[in-house]
Length: 155
Image (cartoon, rainbow, N blue to C red; front, top):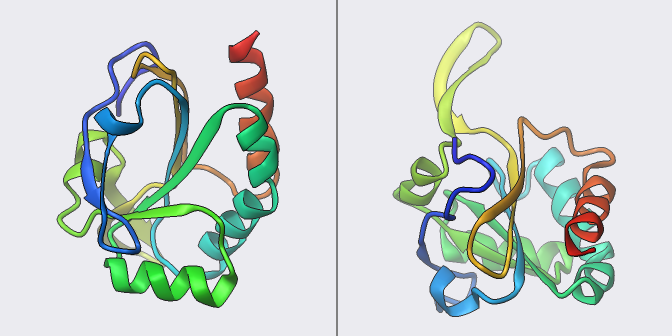
């Protein structure tokens, strides 16, 4: 797992419109980079809808919200249209960015072990450093926590 204070691992991934988004191109702003397991699942839908509902607050804090999952750009497009999302979603189909951030890990569910995304959020400062992180995120109340931390970091 990437540590607070470390340089954020670089990435270039396609978004829901198959446009490549690279960290180097969006550095200079505050970035809320969140990793989630799968489009159109209950917890992931709640999280994406919560970020969308609060998008104006994040914009007022000079921050961009970006979600990352192993889903394809087409699945992201479907998710965005179905749920009317106002955030950018990046497709990490080969899980290289998930691995770079340390959130592709062994998980357990109903006695079965498998590799998967540990729901995590990182705040990247304008210098491209990890300013805050949450691992094993519980969706309820998380967006408020991220907003509060952003405000604190910007003071």
